[in-house]
Length: 273
Image (cartoon, rainbow, N blue to C red):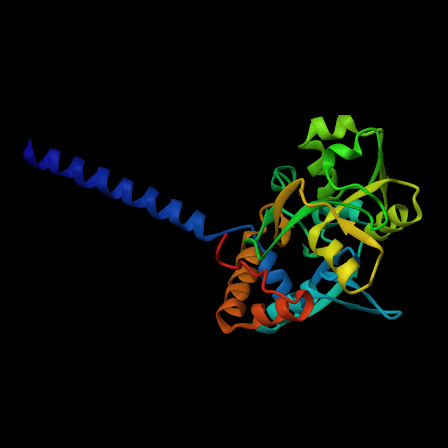
């Protein structure tokens, strides 16, 4: 009797061991080939909005430069691959990422609740906000002074999300006008076709400080945001490889140098959030 019980116990233990090993084998075999695909091709295709200075913008006729470009090149150097920068229509970024036209979205991409449902995000690498810009000749100082006024924003940007998250302010406006690029928003404010615009803080600061645009930023931002690199949902291997490289850049002080070069201050928060 005892021997039968012992045999049953041994059989049960063998079955448990068999299924445990099978489960571990399944976990080891992953269908996430995102990193191996990039390494095999020898390049990372980076989808960008090339009108988001100082993070990513055109310099001259063909060169694309900026904070994000320098950061991405440094990441690719660590991974042993090259960087291909591919300007895309910003409104199509989700689609182009899903069909594999680009490996990541990396140009002043703010993390929002809506985007977290769509992208696999790296950790945050810099901080920003959505702010209101007006002509430097205007007398506007506070948000409530824009009641019944016209405001422009870049379509499919986090500016649109920031407006939606502030319904009382949005409903107080006379009209909100979507535009294709941030430059279009700046020009509309400067030429007076709208009273104000909502844009990224870093981009607005660069437009005023570096480009000398006749604009000013109202004191009260609509929100606070962080930048991160966006990957296709499920592409965890590639995201983790890029995140690991970013953390190495932070440890070596390279992220600090890149921030100082393009922003004049250190906004890097790699590894903090």
